Length: 275
Ligand SMILES: C[S@@+](CC[C@H](N)C(=O)[O-])C[C@H]1O[C@@H](n2cnc3c(N)ncnc32)[C@H](O)[C@@H]1O
Image 1 (cartoon, helix red, strand yellow):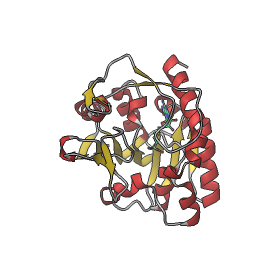
Image 2 (cartoon, protein in one colour):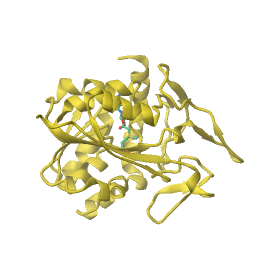
Image 3 (cartoon, protein in one colour):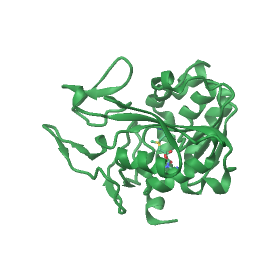
């Protein structure tokens, strides 16, 4: 395993239990309300359309809350993540809710070693996923190979513009790469993005940004057809602390003039059907 993968895996393994216990992931709500779906999936529900009977794969599924939400909307779901600790939480939630979801452990780039090629008609990837992958072209090739002809990719992630910014008490600065670079940007932070009292010892992460054009071009290069691209002024967590406010939809926007920033995006693409 390369150094970045080892460092990131230690970080994610350590956070899984704390995330499952945090009110921000709403695990209890999945248990008490069989119709509850995660805020991330609810946000995109108008764009997702009918999922009944779809064979879906959720890449980087974490503790399974979005995967189970897609299952509740009718898709037959598989979740993939490289973190055994995250999958333990995901399987526990699926068992407790009776969700018929399968979870598999793998690095995204090795997904074709554990999953059948061309076997999914929906591939979903959610907020905070692409920044963990060094090479967006390789991701797009993997996605295209997993999808059946005619299958559909649905991505909602942090906007690469947001990922360039650093929040300070009195200002926001443009500090980090917009375009993909071979070497990671290395962060060292004590916490995580949800409310928790947990103390962490694995605090370093290795991350990569990918420009929106690079993501679109990677998908086109892998033979996919782009079918939708929407940019949003919001994200589901306080990405720029001190500069954002939460709205009734649970999404965070710049407190002042939120129209200045594209904070997240939803991208849809399709693998062409066989002629
Ligand atoms: C922020 S979560 C994204 C999921 C979703 N938005 C959520 O909050 O539940 C990122 C996930 O990516 C996984 N991950 C990071 N790098 C990965 C890799 N190379 N292969 C597979 N999973 C990876 C982590 O284990 C983590 O569960």
